Image 1 (cartoon, rainbow, N blue to C red):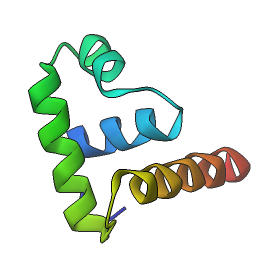
Image 2: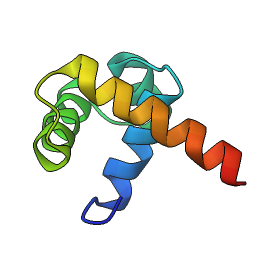
Image 3: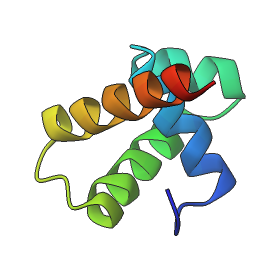
Length: 69
């Protein structure tokens, strides 16, 4: 996940774990608007055309990390 900030990685991981925007915001002490902005940045950086594709990528990443660890 080169090119992502530490915060983007935190959010990406939580997306992959099935958490929604509001839940992520609460966990990280951020506003929903801030998490939404990070999600949009993630979509752009990862070439995800929509939220479903971002979620698919995040789940695959979390599963791959679990298998590697």
